[in-house]
Length: 155
Image (tube, rainbow, N blue to C red; front, side, top):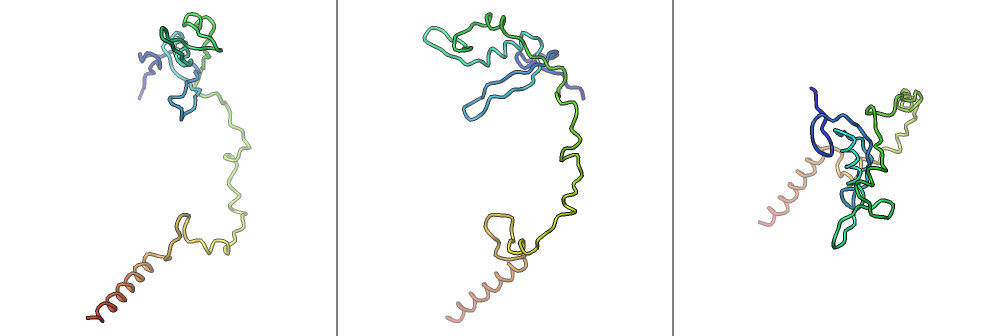
């Protein structure tokens, strides 16, 4: 299955440039994110970076702010270079002595203390009243029998 890359900025197929761009947060509850995106040209990448700048507006114009002053796109384009990324991943090698690469031998040598686990019947939340489903059903039947005897004696 061959999926054709689409430009992040204009949506045209056949993206040839991969670049790392910092995207602003969508709303106040999210963080800004640095992502590797596909673009059809460097110009689309620079436009996306320009659109991520904060906006200030007054009555007559809307401006993007860079380093505390308003800036035009032509000025921004002159001073900015796109950070190209060749492949997808930047890590080339996994360290050999990490915990995920070493065998899990901690479980073989660990000592279990059964006394500590006897009092717990559930993983969390409200503790269970009965140890099994059959015990719960027997208790329910016993309550029903006692209720019937109490109410049938009064008749």
